[in-house]
Amino acid sequence: MRRSVLTLTAVVLAGVVAGRFTADAQTPAPLNPVGSYGVSTLTDVGVPISGTLNVRADSGNYTGEFVTDAGKIPVRQVATSATHVMAVLDLGESLAFAWTERQPDGTFTGTWHALMPGVNVKLTKNR
Image (tube, rainbow, N blue to C red; front, side, top):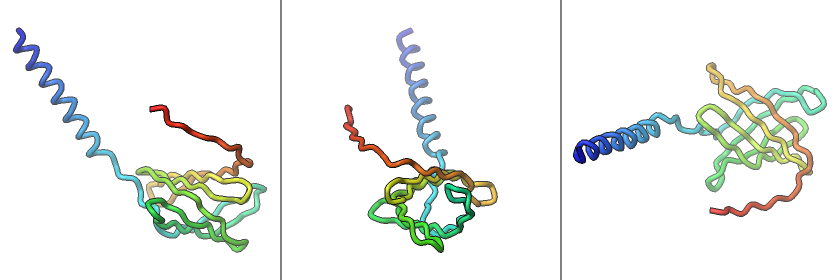
């Protein structure tokens, strides 16, 4: 009986470990956002605006700028998943957050949101 329990336990553990490695192997890699993107959107007051979002790898992070006829807006950070590109733009006294999802045709669609001036925050990791 003891041997059966140990054998069953070993089989279950082997299945869990194998399943975990299989799940990791099937997880799609994050998109590489480096490059230039044509952008068309509206300003926060509804005026059409277009430009180019340039993303580069910079010291292990993705940064860049959004270039329009009105000037350049720095991009502080770009993060990706297998299907999404998210960017934080520096508007001076506030930030904007852009969230896009890759579509089957290779384009990205989503929304951007202007954030009000921020309030300082401090994080301390407990564990």
